[in-house]
Length: 249
Image 1 (spheres, helix red, strand yellow):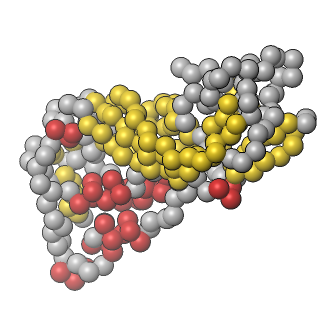
Image 2 (spheres, helix red, strand yellow):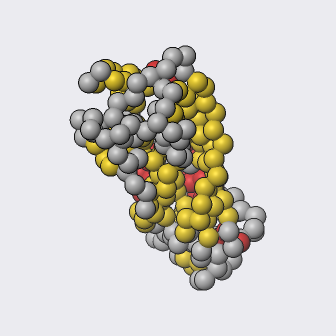
């Protein structure tokens, strides 16, 4: 059964920079995990940011719908092209073709991670129009027999710091209970030590159970409540086969 995962990325306008390069304008975005790409010869060089979204292990990426908030910049630009000998794009095409590009999916720390490229600008080289992306709302479609596994707290915290949908992990933890011997174990019927025996997490609409006290002496501590531990370790995330070429300057 298909399901969807929501994530929102906001771009900080103060991080969007312009620089003169060979008589043209090269845009950059000052943030971690940012690189430059071009979509074919003669296309402008654009900055992109890699982002990560967490899903249950076993989930398969099936597509993404986006809602874009953007504003047009006040002037026209001669956009930098890496190959000066290549014919510049003069049509009405927009670059990038999509502000969100799926890169790959992989497993990490008991989760399925979806990796995307997102762009802080979109442009039309023919007339030099550039639009700044303010935010991207993503609705990611998933399919497959997905399951959450028995994940140590340190791995949950690590993944939460990395992904664009950290609140989804709090929802996961809310459906688990802590055991000193077994760690995090799914409470829902049909799950054993964090593994669903062929049961699709996406199809499970059972109400989530609350936390149960393991030890009255530690029931008020962060260690006794993984949700509190996750919140205490929350950080502010800057919501800052395709043909493209990674570029290093």
